[in-house]
Image 1: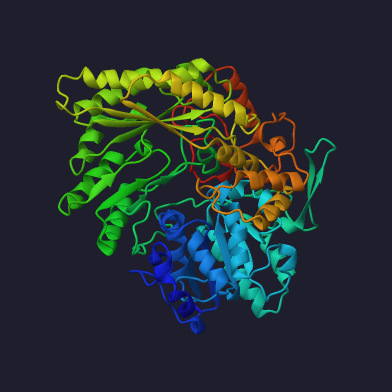
Image 2: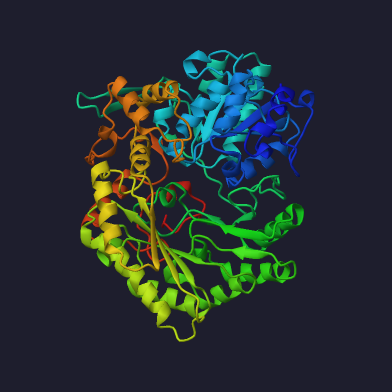
Length: 614
């Protein structure tokens, strides 16, 4: 099969996406393993190969002799055309075998607009789309996890098992149950019922949803013997949890072509718009000694010249200076740079800046998120304009000439004054640069504003808020552009139609499954890519299914409404989210976890992994 595709490799972009055989990839004899797992990333090779979660689970599964995990990525448009024309089904990179012959086909759900690719990959593989058409063992068990699994309902018709939370333990527990079930002759239906008893496992086919006349959810009912509430899984000790000693090194350049070292999970901050800040609670840190050893190993086994410290807020890591001291001992000798993404403006010490730039200097990126202090208080960003200016001043004095500022548009309670505040803040940064007497003469400053449209997400205090309409998004973008008067400031923003669709599926329910299937028939795929996005086809799909998309996006939710995801427990209580929503509308901030516990509910995981009193 692959030999047939190989004939056409020179006719597709980046053939290295499709051949496998990279350094550190794992090849086993399929006759020597009990379980074959196709790990599918529903986007291009370059994006999927940059994803840390895939690297961890790929290596962890393959560390067991009885499991062979292989990688699968969505083929780009040109490669898909070749595959369809030559009847080549979707295959795994390591063996080149069709994934329809595997035991498990697993998807990681990082982004709502990858849902169309999930269905398209099943179609290309020759696997029946719906769970109801995969009742026997002659088809793979289709599973999914990742951040979007916190509201899996739009994909409920298509996925057999969702993994809620972190997968290192629960995935292997389900694989072991699968082995036992096949050995004992248990049916697939019984296997799914047994799997549903495992904490962190959600089997949507075992739950029925009823709706009120107004379209809201009336109830979610579990079959007898199945948990009515499904609790997410977390890894409690990052020092002892599995972490790869090496990554697969790609032949083609990927988005994040570097070693990635995870230093902690969760976030102490509580920004009210940030889903990751809530669904990854509680905070768990890896020790500096362990993180340093793992980072060094990755650079030695992969040959990378850059290592990135991965977390939601790197400068909140309590051992950051100790870790950098240890890493610089070997990274400077090998000319390996250290990248610190996700830095907070309000705790960015000058010493940290000096340590990082001692290897390689680059532009700095900060996220004020909102243009005025009032709106930053609404979203609980907890940084002041003085802190922003002070940090930029420190950066300019250290020789930096480029600053990127991330903002959001369409936040709850936003006014034109808040939009103008983005331009004014950027102008203050420009003026600050030219007021620095030590600046590089003849070197202009570059301040870029990157604006994302706010999308309300489940398990955040803003899950109740309406998303701004398409017309409102366009008007707000135009007002922002008219507020920028300096050529030293560049502005970029997301396509409004894409943000709208993201908002629909972020808070959608099972009825959107029909829309997904209809859209697949119309050829939609790669919806996160501007050149592939077919918004008109999506609108036609909604219309043909008799579903009003704005019901999911621009409608305000009452506090007592049953959300499609209310039967899933991510540790943060709805009572807490309601309280935070009320504080937002009162423009009152909440202190971070280390300053004062807000009682979010993360204590339910126990064992001292958060700051909540017990």
